[in-house]
Length: 212
Image 1 (tube, rainbow, N blue to C red):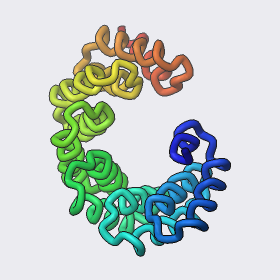
Image 2: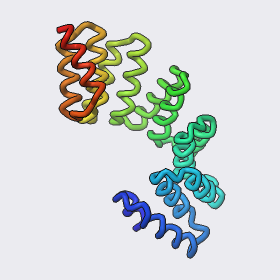
Image 3: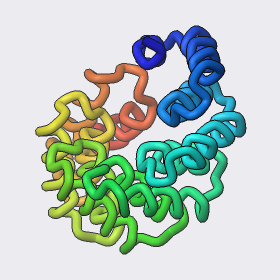
């Protein structure tokens, strides 16, 4: 029931229910894990970390708690600890595409481009329909000058999520770099159709229209 409340955004009620559950069943690791998730969602990250650590104290091979702990450390910009937790989670659950993806994002943030590409690719090996991973991988290929590969990846991102506004915007950027202005304009317009408040796409469209 508490998990359903979390999914519905009823975090305060979920937290209250989980605290009561822990009071009655203090050795139930899933309760600590779910409490950590709920606390993270309301920006009580330090408290979330404490409860997730308790989940791992009870169940040392609890890969989902490791993954959630990695997300908490990521929010705090504690990249070394976050990387450690995601790797530990993957050692136990090699099918956790989100963990590979988040590792890709962290390596991206700290400028380790080849590791970033490696982990986005691993995420896609696990989940070939992972739209955000295709998009982020496309950005990496665009940045290293392989524009045609970037375009293919953005198109795959859109195939798996036709409302991926970032993929349409990034596709427009790549087309523009190839001087395919008509295609760029079309892509920016599609991004704006999905999100009319997408400032970057509006700016990119305005610039492309001047070149048309």
